[in-house]
Length: 219
Image: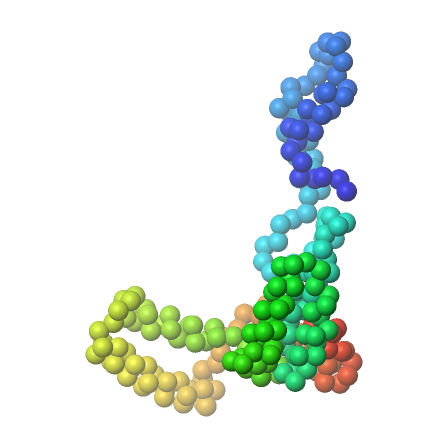
């Protein structure tokens, strides 16, 4: 595979060593200018760096010996919460033998001990199957709002905290009424709406038996 990230100056040096003999060459350009020209040409051929998490991997630029199997296993482990809680242990047992490196085997052992078969947490606690709200973003937003109203103070006086919580309780009652009157709605960005739609489409296919547990983890 061509090394598109090799420094242009190093390429110029190699060419000079291979091609330039002892005979003077008046037409020879300065090495720094040749390096600039080479770098400009190669920039258009380099893959673009991802701008966010929604990107496609350009496999032509992935080394042949890259541990793709480990990446697949890791991604499928991270997708376990999207399965029904009762199905998670079976999929976990299917994925664990596929780990090809010591760090991944250690990670899978941790997941099994603490989250799949643990005494404190079980899949029923963290499965988000069929749920529209799957994160604690709303709670974090509420917490940040309280912090702003407290002017960012880290150690609030007790009675100031009581006042803030009392006002929050009053606002909650108002918000409940506005929601029931369809005057207050949760705003969601377009890209997250598309992700949400895609997830529910996959769940519908899973319920209909159109995709299996293993394939749904890999989507």
